[in-house]
Image (spheres, helix red, strand yellow):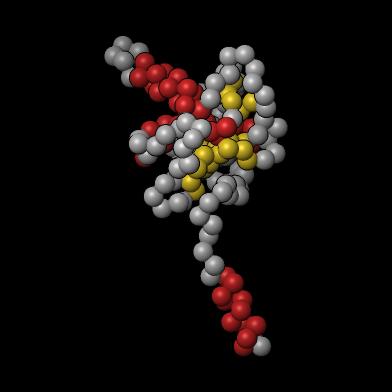
Amino acid sequence: MRIFVALLAVAGCRPASTTGPGEVTWDRDTCAHCEMILSDRRFAAQVRDSQKRRLHYFDDIGCAIRWLAEHEPESSLTRNSELPEIWVMSPNGEKWIEARTSRFSAGHQTPMGYGFAAVADDPPQSVELAELSRLIEAREDERRQPGR
């Protein structure tokens, strides 16, 4: 009996994974940027930060990009970069896919109004993550202009 209890204690002490996407508790976990509850799977994103390898959840890819700009300004969002790890929900909301190899299209009603979603193929006008980041940052810069 003591051995069984010891094995259970050791198994329960395994460190959390330091790579890959995590499990979101929908309608409970909150966005690391805007603090809204994650409920619409189609637009969710995750980032595993470069330093502590901790997961951060987002309700909108725009929130993930804004968070990255604030917390990991040196990170590259290009295909050949590995850190931080970034995932977005597949277009059907069923599985996590790597954001750096995804394409994004505009015109969607997203939780925080950034309007972009991962798409399954390469439709006209779709962009890669690095370009999406530039578009979102440009929009944020425009919003910060006096008189807006």
